[in-house]
Length: 139
Image 1 (cartoon, helix red, strand yellow):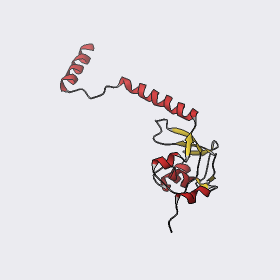
Image 2 (cartoon, helix red, strand yellow):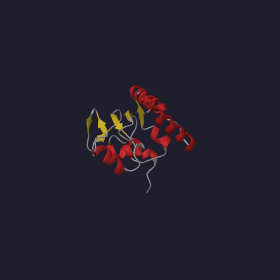
Image 3 (cartoon, one colour):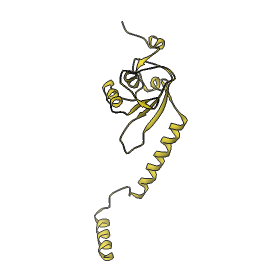
Image 4 (cartoon, helix red, strand yellow):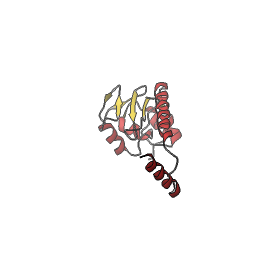
């Protein structure tokens, strides 16, 4: 017998790894479990175990991506679900705090500004020769 989406509405608590997977923060429950165990997911400011049960209203801090990119989100659990749905259904499960949104926007802007010094493409053969000629004339 297949469960419907309405069956999940009666949930009071759910395992953290299952919720992260259902909210589409991680592709698999195994990846969610690894993220929790490596300390990339915090509950109330401290590390948690995979089996931690969360409920509506809890605040989570989730770090995704590489260490160089500031991709830390602070989210509030709005709903619980044990089934993974599409992205629209996943957006209903949580809301990101305003501080988290502004912090991520700030760091994205800083990354963008840091890349302005780099050229958009590699120099071609003629431009490389001109650069080499310029550098040798400077010495």
